[in-house]
Image 1 (tube, helix red, strand yellow):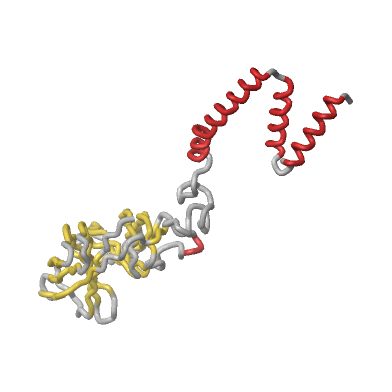
Image 2 (tube, rainbow, N blue to C red):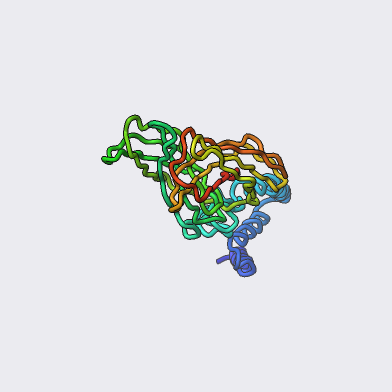
Length: 293
């Protein structure tokens, strides 16, 4: 081996040893060293200037491109389990709950048809939210209505938002059963619930001045919907359920409140076209809380 080759080999080994933790840098420095030996000063100067320009372009253009397209911070919508997430895009600081954090579905406590006129029935399901610190995106549901011989009369489908309250009603008005007698209703959720952590304070609405009139003729239920918060709410569904002495739900009605001003109250009224044929023991008025998800 010639003197030049031996000298280059020693230099190469020295460069690699000093940069043994980064062999890529070592090879680059070795290339620069050999380039400086093999070429004239003018060529080396061009190489140095070109390297400076290339380095500048890498810093000015390459680094931002890398940070934007290849070094994205973790989000709750990137399809990966990263950051402080407990699962893929769920748990941690994500609004969506992981499956092991919540019970999977709302619990249906009962479902019944309530006769309001000949052949017409209000359908009501009374459900429970098992995860009161969470709300569920609108879930699809179906009422199946049968006659006394368990023959299906018809169905009523819809979607329901599950509010952050322990119990809540789902109301479908004026189902026409025709001439069928002694109808019964079955209620089912038909889509999976996606639970999200409640991001805002629960709107606390209450009922005041409740009064039932004309129960034996054409019943009328008067009350006031009270808003003690500083927020204004719109399009609030309010359901009234009437119970008999045995604690069974025997009648139901719904009304809508278009606007509920902040720190104010509005009158609400529920009516039935036919008399109650039972003694009223309890009245439950439930506002469906207007929650944004």
